[in-house]
Image (cartoon, rainbow, N blue to C red; front, side, top):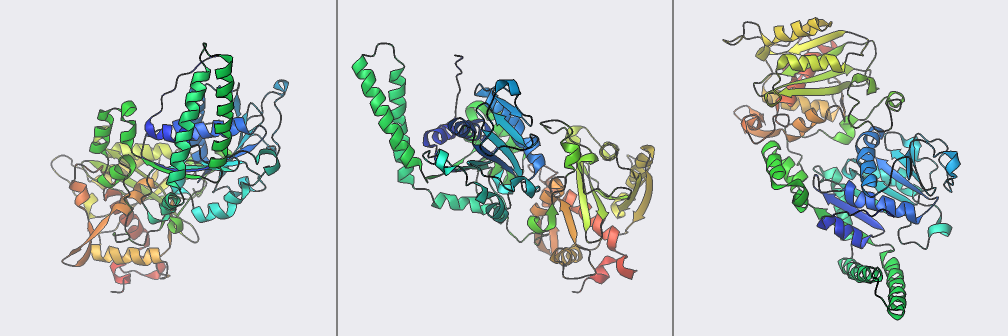
Length: 543
């Protein structure tokens, strides 16, 4: 038998020792969530429950294909399990292997992973609710749990963890729940903190101590000089401890937190230092140090609510035809089901020496949809024309080569470094890529206090003069982050957007206010003359 030596950091070791029925973890970036507890617990459940079933749960199906399955498969292989030998991804095992079907079998293979003993992993996402219908699961596993709509999870997915009590009911891990995430940064993700209050710390300590003793017994049993009497004693005590642990683990909740510093032996100190240089302080403190940094509701876009104002919409017919695990390779508009075919695109930009950014929108009957945000930085050795080229490459498969380009006063000046305006450069590059351009100059930007009140009206959705807005959650992560982090302060005219992040070298410029400024321009340019008004947007605001 092939022996594999594995190294686990301290948080991973604690998870393995406890092996509670329910396990929730808030761990920082690169702490080994997938390589440790998620991989270990999926293997444990699958091997302990032959012909059972586990739900691999994600917010979106693309998340499961793109970010959950690839590292999980790699982690299974690290444990010694081989693809197409011990498990089969989105395809049935060969019939000649005579692998049994699950008790509740997967009727089609494309949404499942099949284990060597008949256990099946079902891929279940919240943007495709039909994948959970009729399931009878024996365990649930979820990575990136902070992105879940927790109320919908409790209503639609949690009740499916209900099957086969007569078969596996004697196992402590039957109907196990495993959920891991990095630190939530908005109030709607705080539900996972409540799990800490459900944990019995004394019980967890007892489990760890008993498991350590059992480990000693098992290590001694591997020795070659044991007398038969000592061997019989160790076997008897091991069985007693295993039964005791099984009972202790029933209905036990384990909650843990870990920072990236807990994995510094693998990451190295230089990686931590690099993240400190590159990440915004709130992002570094939440994602790396695992501090509880919950964004408050008093920013410039304080009514922005991701549950209300964002959505997921993928063309899964296209995605599923690309292969079993995408690993970030799906990077063009063919995956975007919300793209309105045959309709022009509408764009605006923000221009800066350190970063150039762009947002893309289309108007539907009910909403103005922001379907993509993009940026390039001088650290990438890229400039404005590179951003336009990337936009054209992303939308190369769109069947309408027309674009409305909204720009303000910042795009119409020249200086000693260029004879053309920024607007001219954008238009020429778009046309060089085969696009028909409709330039739309919006003039001087409204004052900050006007934009502040405008966004209150837009996001509140109570004034019919302002078209409600929706963001593609995955494609617009950058502009949403920029808007969420945009602070507000009091200036001479009232509320102002706090733009000091643009001058802070410690803050990545894609997290600063640049993209939010491009978003302001897009919405103002699109709707300043809408609904029969010929006036500028500031005249629609009631002070």
